Length: 153
Image (cartoon, rainbow, N blue to C red; front, side):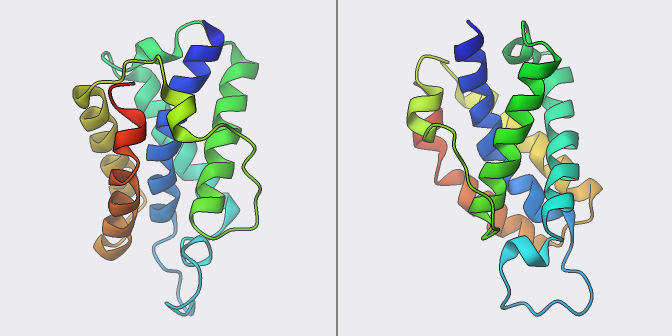
């Protein structure tokens, strides 16, 4: 059961990948041609966004079920995977060692409603960190491409 919960949380990793993109709304003096990772503020920004996003998911009445049974160490591992995934996805120097999204989400039965609720939380997180619309659009575009590997498996 912990494996399937961890796998489900990988869905949130994908969605969270969009969150770090929003954390650092293009810091002053950072050229737009730099990686999204750099434009968003780097590792610390990804950590802040991920923690906020996962906190929202875990306390959502319809999504909290995916976090039931995880102890603090398991939750920290999920956060770490999400952070590394986002770091790689945004062009950062991290190494993601988790499963691919299709494998990670198979058997979790994530629905369109779960996906939509998660996307709404991601948008809220991005807005909280004042991520510009351009970067938010980049994040949501990247995330939408993963939906087929996550929903309905």
